Image 1 (tube, rainbow, N blue to C red):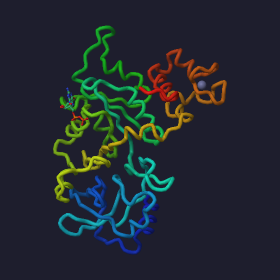
Image 2 (tube, rainbow, N blue to C red):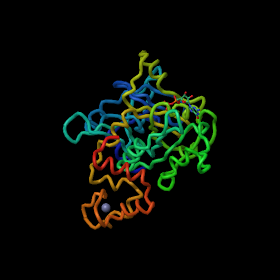
Image 3 (cartoon, rainbow, N blue to C red):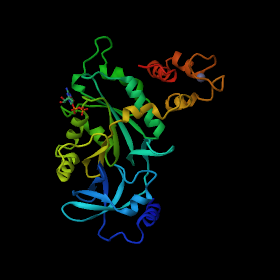
Image 4 (cartoon, rainbow, N blue to C red):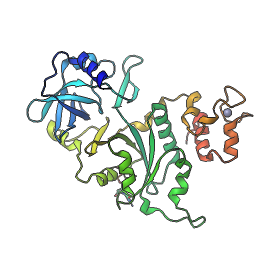
Length: 326
Ligand code: GDP
Ligand code: ZN
């Protein structure tokens, strides 16, 4: 990894990265400027990429939120991006340029956290399934966070919590965390899961995403205000991703538009591969092109009938496979 970084740096800006350049992390885009969080300190720079980078990065976008960069400080908190390190992963969507152009929404995500709440608003399982498919298709490890545990009540019928009975189908497939951000219940496991990583967080509004970030880091670094101040503009853009630092090396990305992205890149024929619980049975169907909808000799349908695959998950598959809206 270190070696390949060196190659790309050399390609981009040889022969002259100043010795004073420091490693940073692009946390927000603002027009042609980028907010760069210093990695080994607390400074936040407003930075512009140098010309060489602009020329080399035409195809994938010059700089994206999430990029690891080297910056040199100019004056008044302004800085220049000298080099962009190779991306380890990307979350992207088809761009507006020539065919094949991709717009990078977020560079270098390590994992995704899909967040819902026990109530207010009620859980939206179909949306969760779409998010999970996006994560599978992108190769991002996914986790599920269920907030507002304080609103949970025991189910009179079977004495199990409502949250648990809603999400237990997922527990054998993905890590599921139950917590209350507001009441600071159950935060240690989720904090540990985020530690040292860049996590994409997504979920409906009102489930408590901001509350979780605040609970994890009450004095947290919020780039939005600093950048709005630095550029003299009151309003900040919400169309591109933003990264929040919730610990020294722990970052969480808010990516508007991830919901519309969720199904756009997946074709019907590959959908079954994005349900991890189907995978061991794929290839065992009587018909090679089995859609697992009503075909005879389909081990997936049989597993649903035996209760080994959750019916709710299968119904999500069926709705997405047949193009049924919610
Ligand atoms: P976001 O839109 O996902 O960022 O949600 P917010 O963090 O803005 O929270 C939405 C509302 O839910 C606010 O009124 C919060 O006070 C409330 N909230 C957040 N966490 C909890 C919780 O654990 N329990 C309860 N009861 N309310 C919460
Ligand atoms: Zn089948």
